[in-house]
Length: 186
Image (cartoon, rainbow, N blue to C red):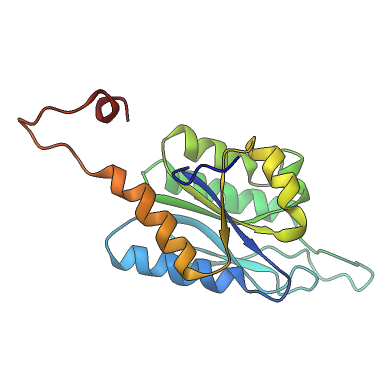
């Protein structure tokens, strides 16, 4: 069911884990190595007015929460603000990237909304995608991804192992060498 070399990976986390810190640090390290990581990582909590995200390619922090309404219960995500963030990521994606990180897979993405279109766009451009998926949403993720995803634990070592596996295939063939059919088709 899972392809260890898939360009699509889910960082599966439990409620006591912080996938945002893991993703943010991983992206910062890849950027420091000269790679171009775009996307966003959540900052703040979904159930209060602090919900925001940091754009990984610019460092800009965007508010994603609805304007304060004390009567609102549950997630305060403003869908228009989320779509605006998605458009900004898409613009950055049009300039190329080595990796796209999407902060969460939730019910909106499950229903084909939210930032699901960015996942498709990145994969169509042969750019790997990494997304945080809560353990309680993993079955929905598998349906969404058609089973074509790597399941990673919410830890840095898992990310490094996955990244090493998919980026090792990005080495260019030396001029004058005889590439195999598999290398040509990659």
